[in-house]
Image 1: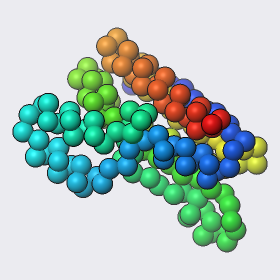
Image 2: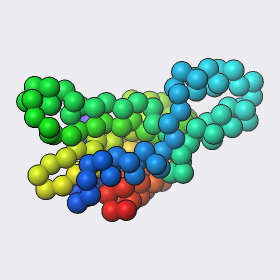
Image 3: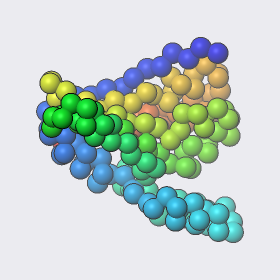
Length: 162
C-alpha cells in the first residue's frame, strides 16, 4: 500500500522557548509508568476512561514522550543552535476510536509534532492523520482522523501565535 502524507506546518515569529511553553501548557504530562499502571488496574471501562480524562490537558491531549533532537545536533556542532524537538502527543480515547475501524492506526497514533527553529522562525509541523488513514478507505476512521487533525492544527496555530 502506498500512503501519500500531507504535512500541516505553521511558522511562528515567537521564540522557540515560548512556543514550547505554549504546547506544554496545553497538553497533559502524566508519569507514563504511573499512567500504564493505572490503566492496567482500572476494573471497568468507565474507570479506564476516567484515568485517561485525568491525564489530558486543556487541549484534550497528553504527551507520551519527547525527543530533543537539537541536543544531539548541538553536540556535533558545538554551537547554541539549532533547536529541534519532537513531541509525541495524543488522546488514547481518540486513538481507540480510529483503531476500532483501522487497526493500522497504531502505526500513526499518537502523533508526532516537530518544533524546530530555523532562520525564518520556529516551525511547528505534523503529518495529518486523515492523510495517513485515507488509503484504508474507512469513513468512520477518517471522520475521527479529520476531527483529530483539526484539534492538532488548532493547538499548533495557537502555540505559534499566542
